[in-house]
Image 1 (cartoon, helix red, strand yellow):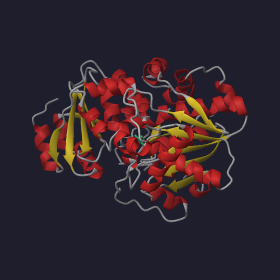
Image 2 (cartoon, protein in one colour; image 1 turned 60 degrees about the vertical axis):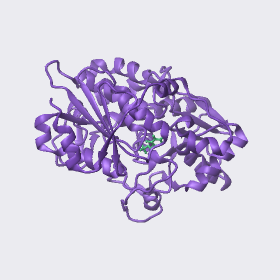
Image 3 (cartoon, protein in one colour; image 1 turned 180 degrees about the vertical axis):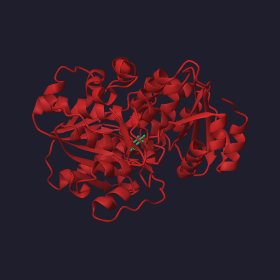
Length: 432
Ligand SMILES: *Cc1c(COP(=O)(O)O)cnc(C)c1O
């Protein structure tokens, strides 16, 4: 299959090109030329996520350098626990946070790394993967590329705007991972990453690539887990399910929407945002208006101008996006706090601030009489956000073993002024 740009000014590219490039040359995002079609029955033989992913992604990987590697890539990257837990009548939680850095981004980062590793030619110069992160992406990408020969990772994160445990994780890898704590916000980090990826001088010096959520290599594996979970539910309840996804840059929710587009029985896809209300405003009828991100307790969703919106709009270019079975709702910090507390008091379940946004939206829908079977995507382990969660529930949250291991390593990040000049100066010393 070929991949084309949302801006239509780029010749169709192979999967390999789209994976390696990140952004299309015309500044657009790569999208698949077409979507395959599946029914839950087609997937009945898929007993685990790697098996489902192999089947669902086969068309996207057809006629590419990676066709024969797809099965191995899925096994290597996606064989993580994926519990689908009943949390109430006709309500389930899809726990996406059992990977090495305890957030859903592990699936996609590992998948992208497994692909890029196999696309690398023996005689190629070392690739430098630049990643701007609001907290979780950086660690997932670092874990996925750590000690992979031929790759180096540069992480840019906004100093003081991630949780302490996130900061520790971002700096704890070492070896081929370099971490900069940037004096600025997430937008500053993104600006530096974008500059580096687009700078011709730097391109002569370093082979650069990106691992941000604009990469098609991150979107594809996320489709697979929504397919896997909703196909399994269909087989047991024979009803479509609504899916509520904590949403920032719109990568994960778009994957849920695409799972429905390829034929899975998903009713509404509901985007649960924090106080960054660009998407809820759009879906309530206002014109799309990107704006600066504002800080909230759910920091991995502090996005005011979600880059995947361009992809979403492209998929619905011939249809009315506001009449497409997508809803969006905003949750403020007070509600995040009260939801974490209520869910713990009521069910004994500890959730992270991002998952709390989805749970708050679920509660509103149930109070309004909605009885649809519903899946909540749980996007991070609460132990990553202990400073928010523990005071609310009045007890400590045990670290999952993978996180505990990372927390025991020493951690180091270099301070970086939030300017292109400063970043250029730091990269100067580096060579291909
Ligand atoms: C990145 C992230 C999100 C937002 O996902 P998008 O794909 O950017 O919408 C939500 N929750 C957590 C824990 C995250 O790390």
